[in-house]
Image 1 (cartoon, one colour):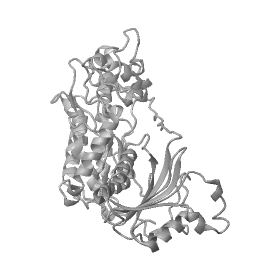
Image 2: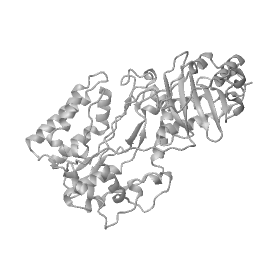
Image 3: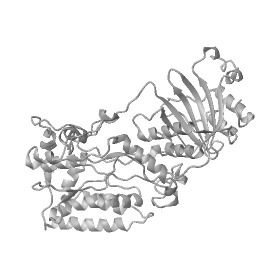
Image 4: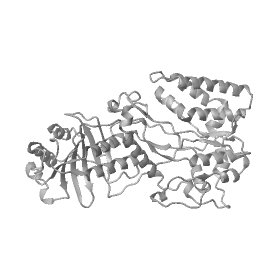
Length: 485
């Protein structure tokens, strides 16, 4: 988590009770399955075929108690009205410029979603939020598949198509225009994927996206067979079962936003907190993104003989026990770590990565279902370990200038792939030293930014600020120069 705010638009957690049914009834087309650390989080494709004696579709078959909804009749005035509304909305979406107001799009999109001919759409995707903050977001979501999804219900109604389109995730757009008040707005890329800013971090983005994908799908691609969903249960609920199976089989993982942060190549990143468990160090690591200089100050383990020295005024004596290291690391590795750490608040969880979202409607299946009245959110849980600690980090560019800061779990990101990716980049950078002392002096203003109450407060009180002894050791290093004592 970080100081930099991020409003992540998430799709509603649809059909929570269905997830248990899908885990049993949607089976992989092949017989082989891979084993991995994700075994504790089985997906529909990882589970065995259902027991014929079990009614795994019970929750879908009784429809949540809602009224039955259907498509509008072909040739009906209602369908013609819905089609006209869609065409008007399509023209608005296609004509949006970045600086255009988005009120017209929002109003027309919500009106179409609430239309009588969209009753099945509302049952498929209840409580869908179609209010966009900017024209860029509206145009991007429309092009990503929102338009195809809305139109498919009209095409199915008049019989021109037999393709069901699944709803894509709403893309997160993070640019200086969509986040003008963000402290990191000056370093954000435009939404244009071909812009020099985006291209400058293309390799970093590719590595991060691949990491996120492997985090949730370490076993590779598997194909879900949804034929059992059509066959098992009352025919009138076949569409509900089949669509839920297809939706549950989509690949989802964390994803970087459109735009996002560009390269950050100057300033210092400071990481501080406790590393280790039974054998630990309370340390401060300062990294210069321009030169690769790395200064480390560590109070390691607990030494009872030093207790009370700082409180008694003997800060200098206590600082002599602080371990000091001054060296240079590969700047490009440090910059990638800094970019990844600053990007954590903008990473969007559970994004559908599939781009081919059209599905042929099975023969004989009627697009009709019940409104689901039993929807509720699923609680999310994390994991923890006594061997993990929390580190604070901040990016500082001068006296009292701290554009961004946050916290990371060490030595891994636990349940957060974006944090885990950043932490592992930090570990890699620290293991690649260049011979010699630090390439740049440790600035005194950096030490001041950590002391005198200037260090950002820990979000959850899990990280203590650097001790007086560490700060004194840092001030001594400023006077000493680029090599450790």
